[in-house]
Length: 329
Ligand code: NAD
Ligand code: UDP
Image (cartoon, rainbow, N blue to C red):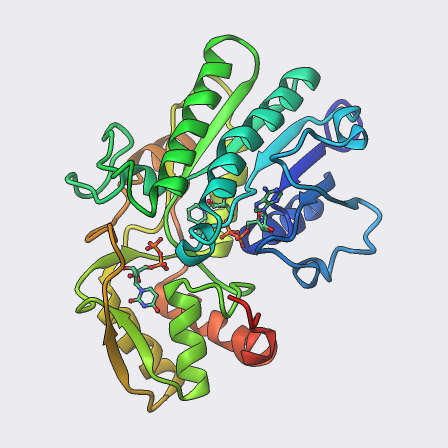
């Protein structure tokens, strides 16, 4: 509640993996939530628990386009911007749209926040560090992004969105928070979105070959979705001086080969591992330094990887399996 009324919150990208969990969390906290989404990579299915909830509203819209009057006229207290495809094959499918979503879309939402005095949170990414020379990645590291490569539409889009967000803050036009999110997994990952946890879990459950790109020695650090959502809400609600960008992720780093072995052990699958070409500019190592989030927000992830993977695998078995695969992806 804010001044005796429910907080009015906009979640752009609210029909996606992270966005749908965030909408649920905000409603549980007593907010009135409007989800804005074009269903590019999200789905109505993700919002099944919310669609009839009196505190929830859904507006179908592409944030590259000017916001519809219904949204532009509303007074929000908080604007979360999670709208953007996050899986490499999906964000590379239409790179121009990905770049415009990050930059033009962020501008539309920042202007909305400016107009109604809302606080704005950008879901940025560990991809702003590119293929990093610094390890683990700390917020003060400026990154190593190839601006002409196939990942640039996403990486550079997010970097420009961060620039615009901090410029709005410096100009006194909006209060902003920037979360640099590291690889996150959990229920509602789309089985066919091409990310490693989605691929490996769905392949293991279907008894299909498991695709490891390169030799599997590259590392990532996986954060369970509930932990990540807690971090996002804490960052949005953090009062006081502009904290700068904040890494949110789990510092538990492992190789992709180790991840595959863990999924095989949990599922008891007899799938074979096959090695395929490593995608261009695929980062070799990634692990967040989360000292800032710990100190500022009192936040650190609580869910061990094995526990989170078991919950994810159970969800894939019950709801997310091969039947949800989109044929065109
Ligand atoms: P997702 O693809 O599941 O969700 C993105 C949502 O945004 C989808 O519902 C999609 O339909 C919507 N969307 C995309 N383009 C849009 C547009 N132009 N207009 C309106 N809606 C649009 O991805 P996710 O994993 O939930 O990621 C959410 C956000 O968090 C993204 O901004 C992503 O960059 C960021 N992020 C996620 C991760 C992760 O590991 N999941 C890591 C780093 C950053
Ligand atoms: N990856 C893999 N097999 C797959 C999908 C991905 O080995 O079926 C690798 C990918 O090359 C990368 C890592 O797993 O090194 C994480 O990939 P993902 O697309 O999930 O996220 P990102 O590269 O954006 O961190």
